[in-house]
Length: 279
Ligand code: DGL
Image: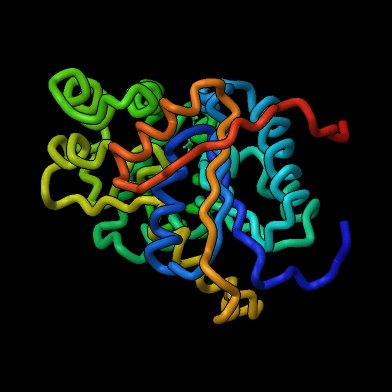
């Protein structure tokens, strides 16, 4: 790939396994309303959490390659599981800057905690990768307690974000972390902000919830500013495009509209397997 400076008027490429990364896309749009974006949800292969990390890596690189071919100026891996799987590869592989969700979220949690007991919830893949543990290890004063919450992503993708069943699952996953006396909880999956109400109800009002959406949007803002890649004024109306790999793009539109209030008119179907990957 060429090492030219990316075109500042090009869109930002944002990617997740499904609708979760829309929380990040929304936060980016709120901070940088003049930027164009292409959002890809790999809905055909969601959830990533229970899959072997090598599969997640392959899927993620396939989609990121596709975004680069579409000419994006920056890649945002709006998925913790994919960030854990490909971060190092992605930074070496692409000339455009790559922003992921784990680093910014850890920095924020570390600055918020007062009692230095931080809880982390994420998918099985994220928790098993120990990507968060590696970053928190640089702050040995912080005690990290983690829990995988495998059912959360399925609930969100099914549009189920509140009610007694969600509360019961949240209680089961979160009670052991609350018992550790945490004062900060990292929502280490971009689907989890959709469950914020249920999570808040279980952890109570005194635990700070840190999610990847706003922290990642801050990182996007900072990197674009530093690299002088903010979309120049006078580049025309910004364009927001959505692509999903699953057949049921209507379900994606419906979920996105209901959960984020984003006015998505259309989602393009993206074929997977079209992009050749190196071994
Ligand atoms: N939003 C993805 C994450 O942040 C969900 C992973 C999944 O598909 O299981 O980890």
